[in-house]
Length: 158
Image 1 (cartoon, rainbow, N blue to C red):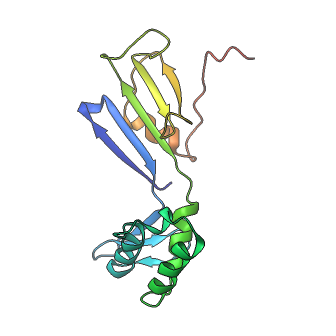
Image 2: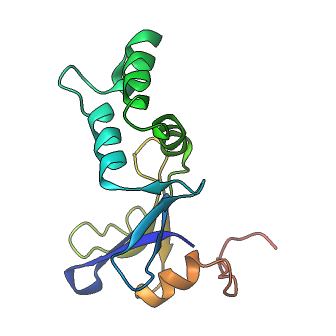
């Protein structure tokens, strides 16, 4: 599992997102690797950042192929792994999960006091109401493939 967790408001909001990198700590400072095994150093991360946040708009904002590929080719002169890493980042699966204990916006079954929001944007998110609050340990267990599965008890289908 490679996820980041952020606990806010004394556990009333807990966010979790997939993390497209792995970290190794071997007695020194942590070393980051892409899922494809590319070591991500300062120079490589700076080049990727520059491609995504160019003054004229990042390569992902390009309206034509040349506006995308030309800056990538130029960056490959600095670091050969640029395209491999950029491709990995573009193809990485988004995975957003948020637990919310929301006293202010609760509204019966439309917006339960305790709920999970799954997905980033309103166009693809869905909400799962919870009968009671949960904690970070529950969310860790929910997202860990090596723990027992959790069940939606009141789905109405048997």
